[in-house]
Image (cartoon, rainbow, N blue to C red; front, side, top):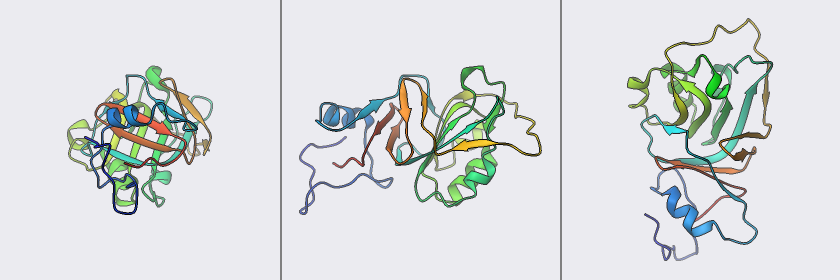
Length: 186
C-alpha cells in the first residue's frame, strides 16, 4: 500500500519493479492530477505469471492482416525493463502467442512484463516465472506462422478502453493496469 507521505529526503521516490505498489493506490493518488493523463484498463486482462507487480515504459507490437506477431525476435532484444504491449488478436484469437519458452526469453533479456490482448499457454510454468504477464486467458494451441511475419512496432494500440502509447508508463498488478503519460512516483 502506498503511503501518501512516503518521501525520500530528496523528494518523491520513483516507482520501479523492486518496489511493491498498488494500482488502486496509484489511481486514487493520481486520477485527478492536473496535466496527467492517467488511464485504467477495463476488466478482462488477467495476471498470469509469477511477478505480482511490474512497471515500465511501453513498447508495442501488432500483427498485420490477421497474422499474429511472432514475439521471439522482439523478446530476444534488450528489454531495458520495458513492458511489451501486444495486439494478439483479442478474444476472437484461436491461438496463444506466448508460452513458457518465450516468457523465459523475455525474462533473460530484461523485459519487465508483457500485456497481451490475446492468449498465452503453459500456465503451470508461467506461474513460476518472475515476469509480469497479463492476457485475456489461456489456450493450448499456437499459431502456424508463415516464413515471414510482418508486424507493426511502436504504434499506439487501443483495447480494454485504454490507449497504449510507446514510451508512456504502464503499472500492473493483480488488480489491473494503469497507464500514465509520464513516470509516476510515490
